[in-house]
Image 1 (cartoon, rainbow, N blue to C red):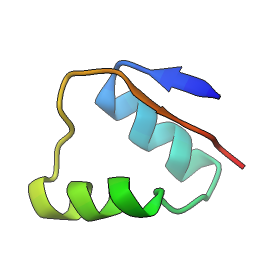
Image 2 (image 1 turned 180 degrees about the vertical axis):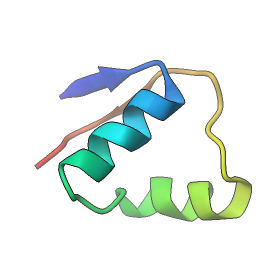
Image 3 (image 1 turned 135 degrees about the horizontal axis):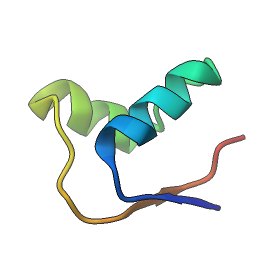
Length: 45
């Protein structure tokens, strides 16, 4: 598990690894184009 508190770090890391956002994150991200400031935890496969 990797933990990210910064939205841009999260997005850039995913983009760098060329991995799609987890479904629930991509759904939320595409809807609001931003994450809540709370810590987001998920597994980067």
